Length: 368
Image 1 (cartoon, rainbow, N blue to C red):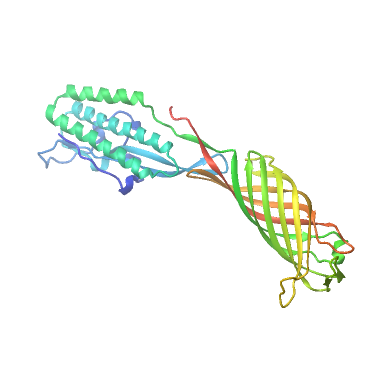
Image 2: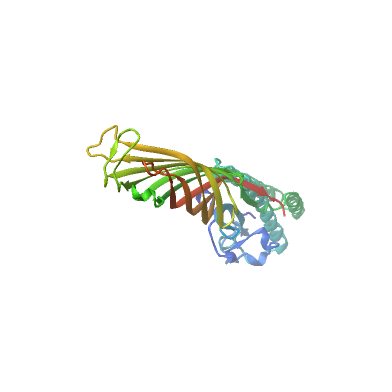
């Protein structure tokens, strides 16, 4: 009597086969009735049991808006490839089959535990190969010892030993995930600058400026840096404090640079609101054709206040980190361009696509 070993796919990936074609330890005690009977065409074997063992990556919902991925290990007897000859004694086959399921289940639990605690830079295939090799050694040992002894008492002792090991190593269920209290983000945005009425006497509003920024946070406290570039037009001519003449209808290059500190409200929810304050810099540069290195420019800086509203589009749990994608709207009031008759500020409005990432923290609850 002997059984042989089979393996589902290369790289230890478990195939998705109908449940009726497979028998695992969780399906209950092994039953001889589940093994197909074939005509008695072979005299060297009374029965043959083949097994599958491996892992696959499956998606899993974490809350309403989060999708994560984890490795799930499966193992058991491949019914469609196993067989027995007619009129085989049930007692021996059932003890043999249960011992096989116990060994596979024990190694499945050990591998699942390892994959649950997998670090970001560790290849799961190497760990899986290790346990696959151990499983093969154990099953080959069982086959060899059974051939030599051929007694039910030895097999019953072996079965009890595997039952004791399973009791000492419960099934590792998995883990819950959350993000560490700190993270970083990158965002791209476009917007529109608006000057108060007194400023519009000299300057048209900047149109379609583009920008990018970085932000970092610890818990609810965040720091953000951003810069944007756009164009404006000089409506009324003037001479600045340095004696430079600014002719009307000339185009201006407009730059905003902001550095702010904010406090996230409703952090982790679908909507986040972050009131912010900091320092803003505004620069207007006269566009001269042909370009000259010392073209007239006006710099202005001062306090900046405002805030952002973020809408969480989705959360993705990747190996080692939690990634959020936001659609963000913002509004600030800060420094604007200077002219002899206008020293005021400007409003900034815009929308952004914001990607934020935090290191992954796994809260394990390994045992049932």
